[in-house]
Image (spheres, rainbow, N blue to C red):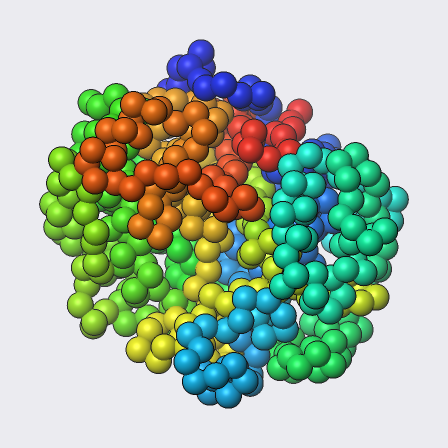
Length: 540
C-alpha cells in the first residue's frame, strides 16, 4: 500500500484530504461534479477530464475559455502519454510583422488584442484525447457545460475576485467583444449573482455535434477569422484548419526514488525538473521543513532552473539544446555546487550558446489517471471575445520574443514559450500521483515546493498544498501570508529580497493532487484541492 504520510499533520485550511476510488479535483465545484458524473455514468478518467475542462470554460472564464490552450499527461493503465495542445503562430507572424506595426524597438508581441492570439489548441486537445482514450459519446461530455452556460450559475467568491481584478483594466475592457460577454449589466457580476453565457453554449453545441470540426474547419472557424480580419488581426481560416495537437511523451528526472514527469518544451515544466535535479544533491529531509536552510536551498535551485529555462527554452524544433542536455546529471551536479548555503546569489544560464490558468486531475477505479491544464494565460487572455460564439481567446502570442538570437523568437506555425504545465509522478514505472499547480511562473515553483514537502518531509498532499509558499519573481522572493516571519528574516540575512506579492491575479498558484494509495479498485486514491481557489475534490 502506497501510504507514506502522517495524515494528522497539516496547516490551517478549510479542507481535508478526500478518499475515493473515482475522483476529480479542480478549482470549481460544478466542474468537479460534471467530471464525477461521467465516472458515475460508466465513463473513464479521460471522459471526466473533458467534461470538467468544458465546464471550466464557463464557470471560471477569468482563467480559461473556448479559446484556450491545453496540455495533458495521462496514465492509461499501462503507460504515460503526453499531449501538447498549445497553439501555433498565424502564418503572417514574423519579427518584421510586429516591428512594422508597433515600432522597431518592440521586444515582444503585444499583451492584449488580436496580435497576442495564437491558434487556440484546447478544443483540439479535447478531441484528440477523446478519439484515443474516450469511452462515452463526445456530445454527452459537453452537455453539462452547455446546460450551465444556458441556465447560468452563481459566481463564487474567488472567481469574482479574479474577474474584478482583470476587468478593471482598460487594456482588457476595451478589446472587441469583451464587455458584451463579461460585463453584463455594464459591470462584472457580484458574488452569488447569476451569470449566463448562451453564446458559449452555442459554440459548445457546435463542437459537440461535429466532434470539434466546426471549431477549426467550419462555422466557428469562419467567425473567428472574420473577427480577426475586422479588428486588424492576422489569423485566418487556413491557420485554424492547419492546426493539430501533438502527442509528445514526457521528460523526467529522478527525485528521492521517484520520477517526476513533465511535458517537453515549449513548456516550462523542465524548470521543475532542473530544480529538483539540483536539490537531489542536498539532504533536505535533515533540515526543518519550514526553516531558513531548507527554503534557501529551494529558492536557489529554482533560480538556477529559471536561468537556463528563460535563456534556452522555446518551441522544441527551434531549441539549440535538448531537454536531455539540460537535465544531464553531471551538469545538474555542477549547478548544485554553485549554491552557497550561507548567501543568496544571482545565477546566469549555465549552458553555452550551443545549446490565468485552470488545472484539473481525474482518476478512475481502473487505474486511469489524467493530469490536464488549460489556460487563457493572463486574466481573460487577450481580452478578445468572438461575438455570437463566446470564444474568449488566449494571449499566448505575448510569450514570444522578437529577438532572433533566442529559441523562442516568433515565426509562422511556431509554438511560443508556455507557462502551463501538468505534472505526473511515478515510482519504478508505476503511477503515484497526478498533479499540477496553476499560476504563471509559480507553476514549476509549486511543483517543486509541494513535492519536496511530500517526498522529503512526508507531508500528505493536502498539507503540502495548504502550506504557505514563496515565489521567486523578477529577483524578489515573495512570501505568502502565513509564511514564517523568522524564516523570512533569516532569508533576508542571507541576501534574499523578501517582499510581499503585488500580483492579485496569479498570487501563489493553486494546486490539485490525486495520490494513488494502492490498487485503485481497493485502496483507491487520496486527493487534495487548493484552498486558494473555489474548488473541491469530489469522489465516490
